[in-house]
Length: 330
Image (cartoon, rainbow, N blue to C red; front, side, top):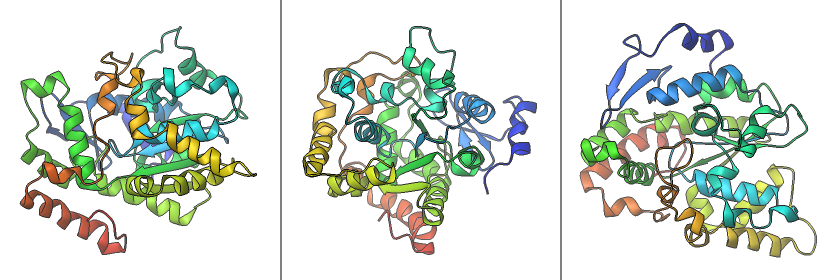
């Protein structure tokens, strides 16, 4: 069950201190438990702001995901699908990182006051027009965020990825942090904590299953797609997302339109854009723009995880996923 309004207020009456169970992560970071999920101090604070302040519009699209499961790629795809007839937007992915085109609620919009010159983010926060379609991203679990999502007719697109590739992608991502150099997150410890669910926004398994369950119950509300499906058949996935979002590909040029979106949003194309190779830091994120692109490969975990590590994660996957008929992740 997702949080009700009374439960949300719990954060208002508690400071992030010893009243929250916490676990050491890496560097000087701790993770704090809230309703069965784990957050950094910053993410717990910004999640509170999202729960208190965010009101989705009926035409909003919320891109939900567990960290490092293909979020940046989906941002590019969703933006391209919904803006494909906007001539003013033709070169947006050339000059803008997907993270700027589709801001994340708890890591962009509510992490601090938005600078006045950041007009795009200001518009996302302040717009009062419920007819204006916005695309916003979040990592907040459905169990916590479901009440907000269900308060309007907004649509949700959820992407997930093989748990082992997700862990390795997260591990590499964090290696670019200064805290990692001071106190590394050793791979063995990373596997242990991932299996226990003690990672940001974890448990991974509970995160995935709640959104998947909603997609099965209400496919018109939640569209569930895997990273592996996107890699194997991107044209089919783009077509289905267009239909789900209410902007289907139609007419004699539909195949060309789909192929063009797949092309401009390919990993090779995006990772080679100058804006995405930049070592500059976003205004409200501690890692550079180029940290969001590495390999984008399926099965990359085999280059890093030892056999016993793979088996440990697979055992959890069999229990959590295969045990309820979701044959995924192994």
